[in-house]
Length: 350
Length: 222
Image 1: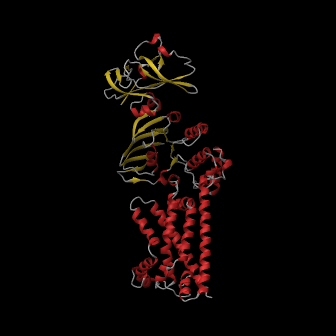
Image 2: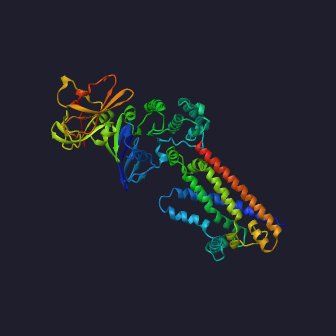
Image 3: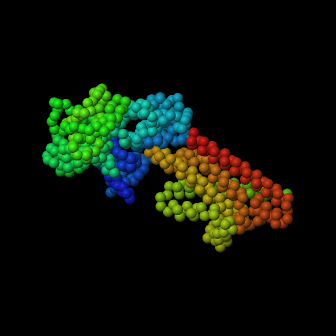
């Protein structure tokens, strides 16, 4: 119940290079558009052929450039949920599912019967894909994949085509499918919240490479690269320069910051998450406390976002964001507004 | 009144369309997936549509004539003579109608969402099954249109047919050749009849095609 990939594929202006390993878990590939997430899935499925490398599914080598092994997609038994579901438009829901099963008629019938009951698409079994809702299409596509008895599951941006309220429901349904599934599942997404909720292991991809890989708590907690910080939703990023073992200069903001972890020589950027700021009071006048000049206040339904710059005396500070729940932050004295960042929340990035 | 041109025309056109249908589908399926050399192959397959019919007929004569490469082979192995025969009329019709089937079917295949094909592959469908169960049904409207166009073209074929199969009443004289014969021998009444029959058939076929094109579109957007 494992997946191992180590592949390379070169294009004129892009190079994919992915190493990944998983064992009966949900792995998420998180990255912006064009970073190679979907291409990686296509290589695993056998739709695209890597230039070099090896892919092993549940112990069976399905691709090995040295041994000239390249098993066809038909024989790889991977379940691939496409972004647009890729249902067969000329077949009904029932036929879309039943045509995948290679078993005697009676057995096939009962398998389809069970799965459409489970996915609550009994009512639309005689309709065509274009006649049913997005959620029903996704359930049909999932049912079709599961009856094909895949060895791994791959979901390509599974919720990008759904409305917000439906998205939430389908996410719960897919999560329960994944928890029942005995094998590796790979989810591709650009939505960090979705990734955090659904997966155990996260790989952040940027420009064809995996930039950081690990348990989601580690990857989201302390990103080490610029792309990782941005993909995990860090809104404040500045160019940086090392000052000392525990001091770094944020060039764009015009301030020096104290860190809890030693600053590496390779530091190039520093990041602070918008909700990691705290309002400073007289008691917290210590390191990393700065008076701020507020430029704009943005009201969200349940949060308030402050756009501000550090008050450094010079006019070089670029804008930062501070996000706080409205319950915590009823009113603010704008004249003596100061913010504090705990040193362990300063993220030094390469 | 000699009604044999109608029978000959229908036999030739139907037979030619059957073969064009299979050849055109196979060529379309092959070319639309090509990555390299697509332009050259596409040009060669489309050429019979653009060539003057007499030039097409000339090429066919060179190939299928008694001294031609294929003609000699067919004659010595099967004892088949193509020139001035019913077979010649069929070959001429296939040759000129092929590009219509090929191009229309290729266009229809190109409209298919590639992910659907990929999904079928990952679900274990063989190439054969993908072609007949997924691609052909999805490209149905275009394939039907291509078939009707090919049939119409085969039915109206004149230039290449007269070069390869000649104008032998009762054997190779099709309706369109009969029109030419009748006019050139001053037999106006006969010409009127064949002109009327051919015009009506063409009209009906265009109507059918438009109908299918419309239903194909409605199916996709609905």
